Length: 213
Image 1 (cartoon, rainbow, N blue to C red):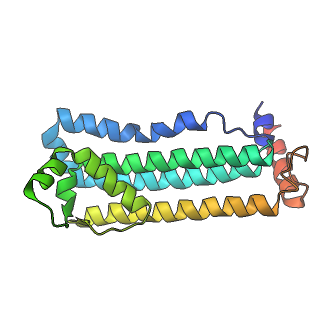
Image 2 (image 1 turned 30 degrees about the vertical axis):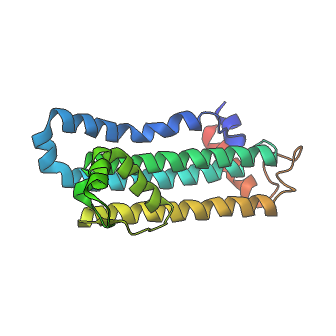
């Protein structure tokens, strides 16, 4: 079974596992609710740990998706559709992650609204702080940079910079997959061998077989 998965990896269960990325933040949210004094003392440490966590997890996810795509046994168009759907889910989960991060650590403490609006409109925004956090996260991830929200602390700057970098890297990897698929469409076409016939891949599979035996 292990050998079969190595030769024909599957993306079937990936959509079910991706939302688990949010679990640590949900735990921190509960921690903040039940132990507010302790959370207030350690919130800077929590914020840095959350940023490091999402960077490590996201890089691992991108690496795994590249591996799964390169060794998929499905037809090219099916594989591309599944990869696009998976990337959309990764995008949504990442935006939600940073939105929760900004919300838990008080979005109005981390950011300052820099646009000229009336007091009633500003009060309405403050009444919907999670939506504001989600908006900031979306603008940061897509690198729009509208300038209406300005980070007020070094940690906020670090969080925004991290999300921007993750968005740029994800877009680059996605384009690399599309280019790879186009250049190797004969190899990945329906009815072609699951594993490309080149020495590097053959050597890799032989090594894995020796380890499993």
